[in-house]
Image 1 (tube, rainbow, N blue to C red):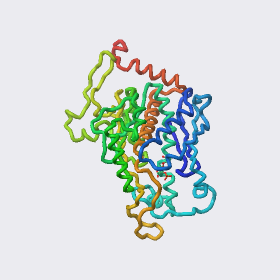
Image 2 (cartoon, rainbow, N blue to C red):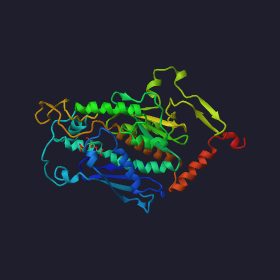
Image 3 (cartoon, rainbow, N blue to C red):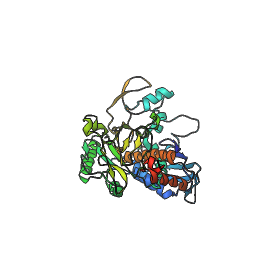
Image 4 (cartoon, rainbow, N blue to C red):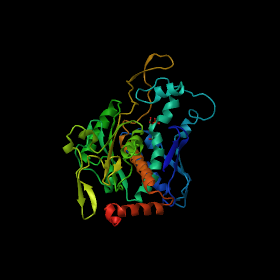
Length: 393
Ligand code: EPS
């Protein structure tokens, strides 16, 4: 089983992540993890912090001479902004200089203050912040490295920002990832990119924020990750939980899940055919998004993550209550991004990769990468044999 834990506050000294359960012998370098972290910082519409906050990585354990040891991998991501926050976020006993008492609607602050008994919204917002997703992406880079041993690759592209969307434009393939990452909003369609940038400019002008959607595509998934036998083993449920846990994501859908609910059954499923050349069962449509009965079909997995507009506005207009006086107030102003949808796509890739790596380990096991891949190859070899014929019945 692959597990990971993150720790750290947005303006604290840094983030930490521990990834446990990786087999030994997985090649990984600091530069590869760093490259994934840089992808998360992409995107027109992000705030000024992305220009000066560096993701400074230290590999603390679990990796020796560029390969995993089978022990927990521990990574630190230092916040280079820390010197500016050292007093306000100090772990030493003391009091903050400024207490935030006007929680932002749509943020975790008010409920977090009620639940944990805080007077200062900063005690909640620092951990609720999406800065934490840098640690998830570091874990995701390890999961992707493991999946690559099975020939699995995970990419994402932005399909909607505000009112601009890609419509029916063609889906990208793994080789297109560079083109996507070079787009200002990580969008594969140049026309939609223009419209999305225009949306961001218009929202920025009036101090507003924008949501949108990212589609995650997985290529080369083995048949049968997840299971139909129990609710908490269904792959679609596991993916939804993992992706829904990303800050500001409010919906997750698979394939054409939001469309087929309004169709008739005859138009809502993926017909199956036998391909004698590849000796495999194929589906030419992607309505189920590559998952049937909670199991991967072996076709492409297509998952969409839908993000709400950020709760922080550069022109605060949302009404709230000052928790110190209980008087009506305008929520406090924090520096913010206009949109973080392009970055969310990279985080969603990571959460999908971690989920699939975990399910792959559950299915194929192995303490070393060699054992893991050997088990997967053996499974694939016998996959479409007629079971009775194989037993000589
Ligand atoms: C965030 C607000 C902004 C973002 C931050 C997440 O930070 P600040 O308020 O310090 O300018 O830049 O995202 C990151 C630092 C990051 O690495 O993604 C928030 O409120 O969630």
